[in-house]
Image: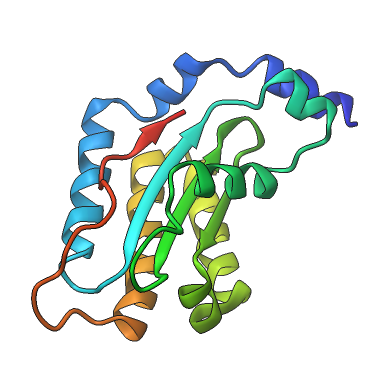
Length: 165
């Protein structure tokens, strides 16, 4: 258990996530997801969480482990083609995690997701939260277009609306 991490989480409040992602930014992110999904058969979700709860911190839960929980809770895995992708931001850690369903992950691999995460984190360090997420959505969409190109009617299986947890 790292004391600095626990303090950082205790000092990161839900209002900070809303400040980083005001309604205007949330609408822009939703639009980016919706527009990207016209070009591929994948499903993209975005969720941001200000900080972990006390129990998760004491258990030493990582941003990646929490992202997997959110992936499951939001049922991103529940798509017909196994091509759902969650972009998860844990604001207190300034950590981005991308969790992809088995079909997409098999095609893209961990290295492809890692590059996208680090690119987004670079934008976040500059305070460009909306732009960082939109950049990430576009990068994920490029992978999805390569492996799941749209070729007709595309049913939207998951909501496009970004979430503040």
